[in-house]
Image (cartoon, rainbow, N blue to C red; front, side, top):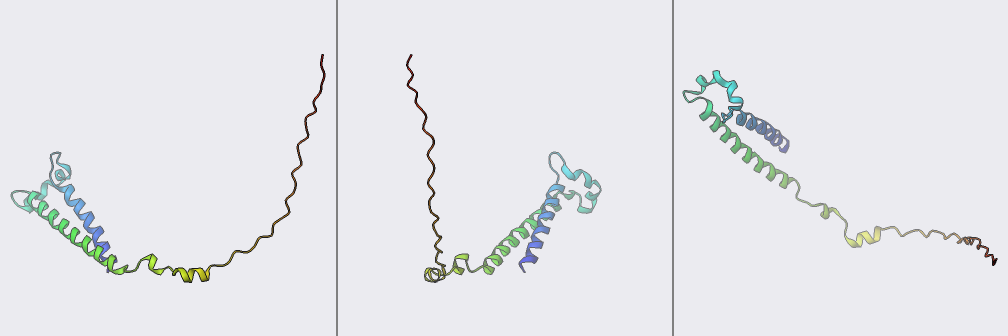
Length: 121
């Protein structure tokens, strides 16, 4: 069900975008390409129809968004923390560390001492 609502959400988003772009604005926008459509929408042109269409699509988009949120919250009733084991079970299942044998420490050879020469002139 959620996948169907998600597909509807994407379709509604695309339709809202198209409806908004077709509306007449101060710079005319894509409304310039709908010159022959004015007779189909009535004497006022597509302005009234596109406004009502945009409002209807926006309302459907909001309702679909709320439905999607409700469906997703119903599907995930448990948290990741609920699936973790309790501390007692964790302490029992934790493997004890293996003792690593210590290698003998090798002595680092000392650097040769500088020879001091006492030559006085």
